[in-house]
Image (cartoon, rainbow, N blue to C red; front, top):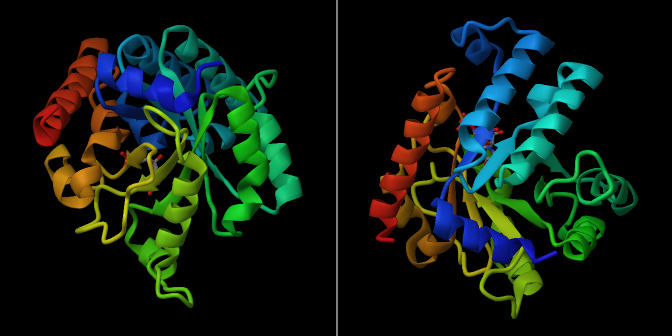
Length: 276
Ligand SMILES: O=c1ccn([C@@H]2O[C@H](COP(=O)(O)O)[C@@H](O)[C@H]2O)c(=O)[nH]1
């Protein structure tokens, strides 16, 4: 399969730079007039996929909101992944996996093996058991033409305690992880398949973001950031940013036209902000 970075670059150009998160919060189900149960989850997810999968570059299901319903929630997630991909969206599974290498191999088999029912175009990973522990996922992604997004500087204020701490050579832990990502992406064109997660809520990234890979920027919408913040946070790397919005779009459902126009507004605002 064509490498994820290449497919993502093309999708961002043709569909616009936007990732919409599928986060079926209980409160959103209620706002949509649905019960907070598996039937409500199924309806919410189906509506979101129907509204957006044929037009946004990336859909990002948040695995936690499906896992909370056990096996029946996972079944809804499996169906959403297949249908979203069939409609042309890239699916980024937001599961933030990270464990010792042998267990990482099982996570890779779950999300990054094309024969798995949960196979996704990309997966979020946490590198804080050591970047090297991610190797099975990095290798599985490369073999499948899939991608990964590795947490660097997260959008929540608590993240700084870990991610801004420094190692012996003076680099922040986030910078150490970003440097590993740059190594993974060396020579890739037009864009590597190992992305970083960097929150749009930061006042200033304060790290070198030249990783030759995509930069997933959550925090836009409900967490307070806007597309206009992107140039300040990402500087010269802003052209590689994939803004991510969940509640900021989902709150316009269940009306299909409302979901579509909210997504379109974020694409337009991002293009204006980054000068694309
Ligand atoms: O640093 C991070 C990493 C991931 N997320 C995830 O993105 C969405 C944000 O949802 P909103 O409704 O747009 O706030 C959610 O699934 C988080 O787990 C993040 O927010 N920050």
